[in-house]
Length: 161
Image 1 (cartoon, helix red, strand yellow):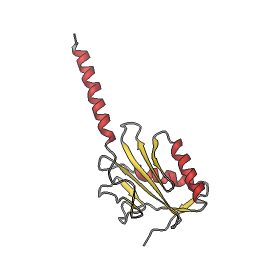
Image 2: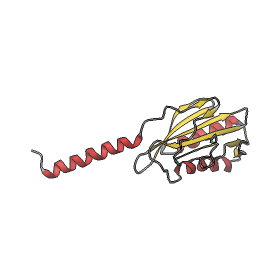
Image 3: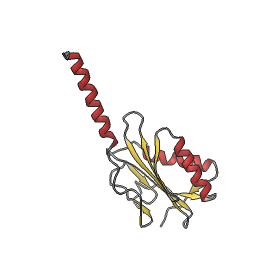
Image 4: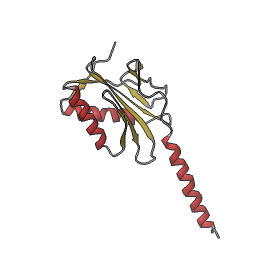
């Protein structure tokens, strides 16, 4: 027979399991490169992109200061070294990463697009759920930029006009 305590414990575990599963959300259907651009950010303040025309969502692209092959290789190595990031799609000019928060297991989408013709790497990082991200997406982009900039591989690209 189930005791009251066992029932309460089982209910607690089941509830938390459902809540944690809900935190992952589903990948958006607008990922990837369309017309040489990453998807636009939604109106909510939980997304940043170098392709954004909106100042509140804009972050600079990474201007290549070394060979594209070396920079791309270093990006992959950096991402693979992050315990909370998993490369889901990787091509010669596009990387899609799922980044999972430590505490609540929220999943964010992080994209990089190598644009050889322009000499840049475009970036986009967005939360799947919620309205605010407390600056996590911008920090993710900034951390990658700093790691690459420290090695002399990239600098801040000027904002497109």
